[in-house]
Image 1 (cartoon, rainbow, N blue to C red):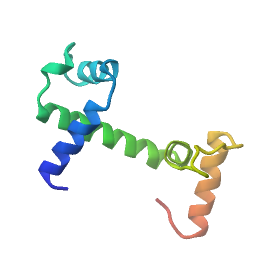
Image 2 (cartoon, one colour):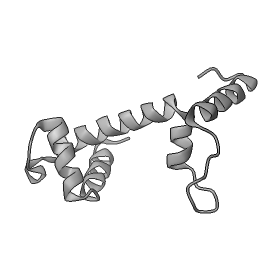
Image 3 (cartoon, rainbow, N blue to C red):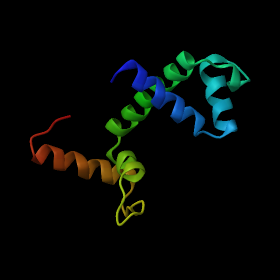
Image 4 (cartoon, one colour):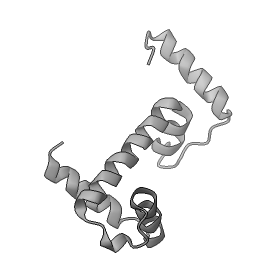
Length: 101
């Protein structure tokens, strides 16, 4: 991804947050109580870090990925298994098709 595109995505991501969410992110990464003082490089750094955390959650838990990123008939799915059961099921499917990651 080009740097300008990444910066624009980061800016869009941050501006779509509520003020409280911006405040919490600002505090988490920069111990700053005023998100309006952040520059684009700081916002981009937060965006990249948050996206990496989100990808890690999705890789570690198929349940998390499914319940947060899939839509069934335009709605979030209802899963009738526990997270542990769903992840075990997903692991067996991956192993059946020769995928180990």
